[in-house]
Image (tube, rainbow, N blue to C red; front, side, top):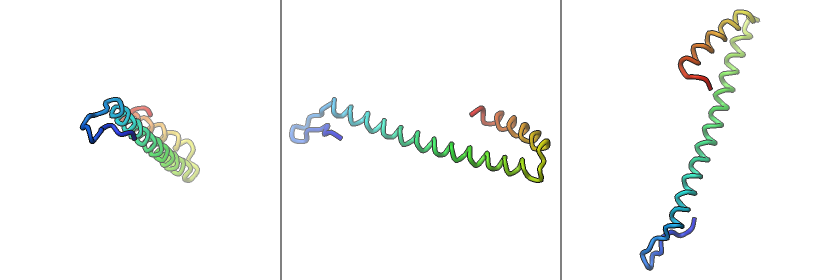
Length: 82
């Protein structure tokens, strides 16, 4: 980060301050996006694993398809499309 305040003179370098603040905002947004992406990836992995485990239990393919459609409809109503 660049110095935005000249301590001796007590003046503020507005351009440097603005640059520093922009960098902080961009950095925070990147971290938030990274955490959101990895969390979403893990969520989808866990959802898929749970659905796959439930669907393949006792080889209930047709029954599993019906449950999957119902669960999908319910979750979409509650949480929207992802």
